Structures are given as structure tokens and as C-alpha cells.
Amino acid sequence: MDKNTPAEELATKPLKPGRVALNVLALCFALSVLGRGLGESFTVFLKPISEDFGWDRAQVVSVYSLTWLAGGLTAPLIGRLFDRSGPRAVYALGVALLGGAFLFASHAQALWQFQLSVGLCVGLGIALIGNVPNSILLGRWFGPKLPTAMAVVYSATGAGILLLLPASQVLIDRIGWRDAYQLFGAVALCMLVPLLLLPWRLFAGGSPTIPKKADPDYVDEGWTLLSAMRHHAFWALFATFFFTAVAMYAITAQIVAYLIDAGFPPLQAATAWGFSGIVLLFGMLGIATLDGLIGRRPSVLFSYGVSIIGIILLWLIQYYPNYWLVTGFVVCFGSMIGSRGPLISATALNIFRGERVGTIFGTISIGSGLGSGLGSWSGGLIHDYTHSYNALFAFALVNVVLGLIPFLVVPALRR
Image 1: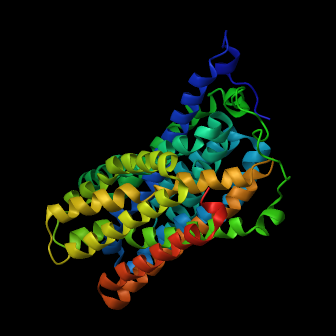
Image 2: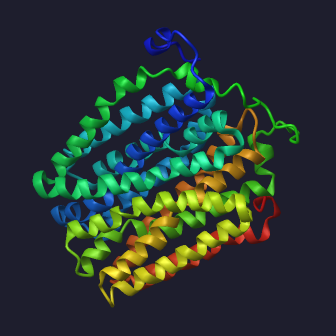
Image 3: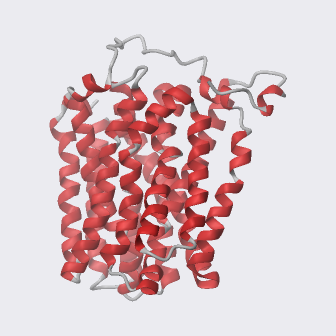
């Protein structure tokens, strides 16, 4: 159990549940901006680190792959830690890991040091302040409105990209990538103290207006991890997370480098992809709204269709490098890159709700981590082997199609 903090002890009157819920939402959003922004910033650091050490694309992208692989593989442990120790311990550990990892990376001299710090430690840190704990905590406050709340939090990926990608490029140009990493680490560690002083007992308690168990029409079947793994919906959700992540991360790891190779200046390339953060918010909320209007399956399939259009536009940029195509790509691909996440998360939390939901949802999230790691690493290998981006885009398109298939054939994912 979390102990009271000074902020809780000084409270003289209870806050309205709605206001506390918004505070929890803002906190989860801010932590996601920090985590996802720092993780995605590696797409800007990729070229200068590669050029400094003379490493090929696959070697450098392996760091990015490990970031998301580590987060995915440890998701069940994080869900279990959240269930047992509460949000304060989970979030504080995540921020501390991020700060220490970037400080260590600023002095790295070998590939394994980047893989350990920016790969494994940053990946674990992001997971500790990311979607698994946020989904569980928000579920205690938003109930049936969880998809909308998750859409807001998932859009933090875009906000992090918008803020930190251009900022990273400016820092690299002015002080170099090592000092930029040192600054990232110091800022993260400075956030640790105010984070620990938040009213965590209040936040962890959940809204008194939301039933702690199931809603009136739901029968609690006492899900365990083993019983969930015997259910077809578990593996359908796992597959959707996996193949979608493979497709998205095969591309995102190399977008800035691709735009630079196509002839755009580095800062313009980083800023262009950074603007995906703006359209991502609208994409998240738009798909969540569509979910309420036309249903789960049509909304998800629409988002996949728009992603496919975005990949095609990105492919065309190498032949016709102009800002119209870049804008179209950013709007289509950028707005949909995480739009399915809130709906998939809400579906999983609804089907497998109960005392072990953190462990179950965390295990399903392994699919996302595996897909992210495999996708980005495979993308680097494909580029190095073919010396072209065409096979990479074809690889991404195939995995987009594989990602949408469960929503076509599995009844539980349509509701």
C-alpha cells in the first residue's frame, strides 16, 4: 500500500471525483509524453551516432529495437508490480531508470553500452510509466469512458514526438548528441522528487462512482493468466498488437533518416515528422469517436486503411520529394500510428477485467513489444541488405494487413 504524502496530509476537504479523474488523466498524459518522446527521439540521434562510430543501419537500429522489445517483454511484470505495489513505486522507478540511462548513454563508447542504456533501460523505464500502468490506473477513474481517456493518453506519443524530435535536432546541432543525452537524463531525474510527493493514495483508490468489480451486465469469471491464455480473444489481441507494431516500427525508426536521404534538411525532416504529434491527437480522438458512432470493427478497419494510404505516400516521396506528399504522409500515417491502441486496450481490459487484469493485459502487451523490436530491427536489416526503402515499405504493408485480420474474423474483437 502507498503511504500518505505531504500533499495528502495537508488536504482539508475531499476533491470531486471528476476533478481527481482529470488530474490523473493529466498525470498519465505527462508521463507518456516524457517516456514516448524520449524513446522516439532516437530516430533523430540515429544518423549522428551512426556517423560518429561508423556503424551500419541495422547495428544502430538494434538499440531502438531493444527499447521497445524490453518494454514489451517486461509488461506482465510491470502489470503485476502495479497490482501489488501501486502506481507510486512503478512510476518513480520508471523515471529514475530513464534519468540514469540517458546519463550513462552520454558517455557510451561501444554499441553494447547503447543497447544496455538507450535500449534495455530506457525501454523498461518507458514501460514503467507507459500504457500498461496508465491503462489500469485510468480504468479506475473513467469506467465506460476509458476508450476516450486512453485516446488522450495514447496521443501523448504524438505530443512527445512534436516536442522532443525538433528539440533533439536543435540540441544535437548546438551542443552535440552526448550533451543532449546528458540534459535528457538530468531533466528526468529532476522530475522524480515532485512525482513522489503527489497524492498517490487518492489517485490509486479510484472513483467512488465506478463499481470496483463488474458492471451489472457482466459476470466476473475470475480470470487468471492461464485461463485468459486459453481464450481465443487473448491471442487475437496479441496478434493485432504484434503485427501492427511490426508495421509501424519498421517505418518509424527510419522516417527522419529516409526524409534526409530524400533531400530534406535534417531539421526540416525532424520537424516534419514531429508534426505528426499534432495530427495524432485528432486521429486518436477521431477513431475513439467513430468507435461510439459506428462500432469497434469499422472504426479499426478505417484506421488501418488510412495507415496504408500513408505508407504509399511515404513510398512516393523518394521519387517526388515535395512538401505536399510529406504533409499527406504525416496526416495519414501520423494520425493513425497509435489510434488503434486505446480501442485494443479497452477491449482487453473489458474482456479480462478482474483482480489480475494488470498481469493479463501486460502479457498481451508483449505482442506490441515483440512487434516493435522485430519491426524496427528487421527494417534496418532490410535497408542494409537492399540499399533501398522499397522492400521495407512492402514489408510494412504486409504486416498492416496481418494486423487487421483478427478484427475481421474474431467476434469478441468486434464488440
